[in-house]
Length: 166
Image (cartoon, rainbow, N blue to C red; front, side, top):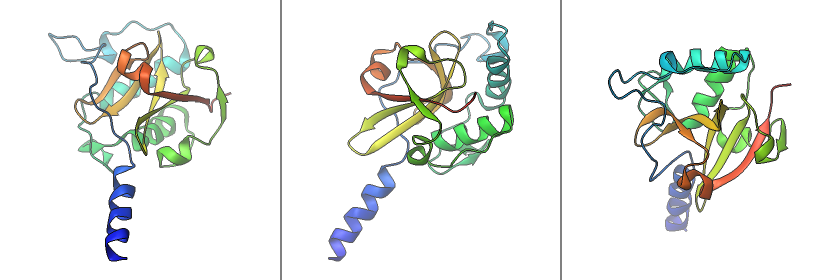
């Protein structure tokens, strides 16, 4: 019985955010290592607000359960971005975030939508869509970064998109 409880506790711990085999950041400028300040944006207020917040978090290392510039996980980053960019409070965990708003088709997504991935048997990952089919997230390998939804890894792990903003 104790062994079962230990295995269950480990599985719960591992069911948080994660990402593997991701490509290098698509937005990073190799010379300056900066992103949001060098990215041209569409003029969309949602995108501008997200890129402004991204500039603060770009490169912050991944830390499971982290909520600060010292380290942050994917769901906490989503919570912070929604709070700071839009003044909205959303749940803390990926599991809870995947239930808010309403589900939309992948090809109907727009800036500010939450995007979710199944990265393992019981592991989920979240991000927030910005311009041109890209999303902000906190990867275990590169920290806070921007990736493309068209990246083969993310395409294969895609689960759902949810609209929270009007």
